[in-house]
Length: 182
Ligand SMILES: CC(C)(COP(=O)(O)OP(=O)(O)OC[C@H]1O[C@@H](n2cnc3c(N)ncnc32)[C@H](O)[C@@H]1OP(=O)(O)O)[C@@H](O)C(=O)NCCC(=O)NCCS
Image 1 (tube, rainbow, N blue to C red):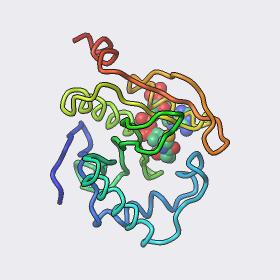
Image 2 (cartoon, rainbow, N blue to C red; image 1 turned 90 degrees about the horizontal axis):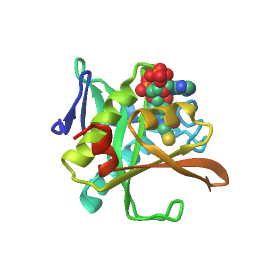
Image 3 (cartoon, protein in one colour; image 1 turned 60 degrees about the horizontal axis):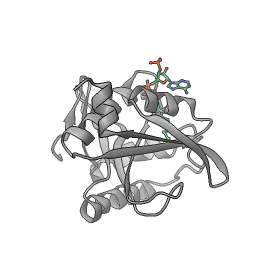
Image 4 (cartoon, rainbow, N blue to C red; image 1 turned 45 degrees about the horizontal axis):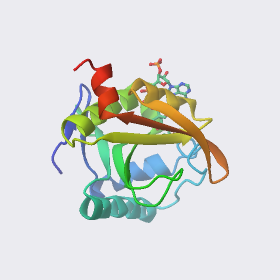
C-alpha cells in the first residue's frame, strides 16, 4: 500500500492506487455525489480504473494530484481530497493548485471533509510551501462551500463554468499564517 502523506485524527491520506477502484466506483457511480459535479456519474469499474490511472499520471507529470482518504481504523476507502494542478484555464486562471474533495455518501455529515481538508491546507503551506491555493464549487453546493470556509478559504468572486454559476475561493500562505497566528 502507498505510504501515508498526512495523518489526521481519524484518517490517513495517501496516493491513490488501482486497488482503490471499487471505492472510486462506489463514489463516482452515485448520482448524489455528482449532483453538483455535472450530474454524470460513471457506470463501469473500467471508468473508475481510468480515473485512478489519470490521477496517477498527474502524480508523475505534474508532481501532484488528488489523494485517497482512508479510515485509520479499518483502512476502508472513504474518498479523495487534496490538490490538482490546473493546466487548462478556469475562471481565466491557470497554473495553480486547486483544492477539492469528494466523499462516499455514507461518510457525509461526520466532519471528515473538514478534518482532512484542514490537514491538506496545512500540508500545502507547511510542507509543499505553496504560495496560494484556490478552490471552486457550484453556487448551489452549500455543503462544499461550508467545507471551504471551515478550511479558511475566502470567496473571491462568482463565475460561470459550463453555464452554471460557481463560487471561486482562495487562501494565501500569508492569510493562513495570520489565521493561525504564526
Ligand atoms: C461536500 C462534501 C465533501 C462534504 O463532506 P462532509 O464530510 O459531509 O462535510 P463536513 O461534515 O466536514 O461538513 C462541513 C460543514 O458543512 C456542513 N454541511 C455539509 N454538507 C452540507 C449540506 N449538504 N448542506 C448544508 N451544510 C452542509 C456541515 O454541517 C458542516 O458544518 P457544521 O460543522 O457547522 O455543522 C460531501 O457532501 C461530498 O463529498 N459531496 C459530493 C462531492 C462534492 O460535492 N464535492 C465538492 C465539489 S466542489
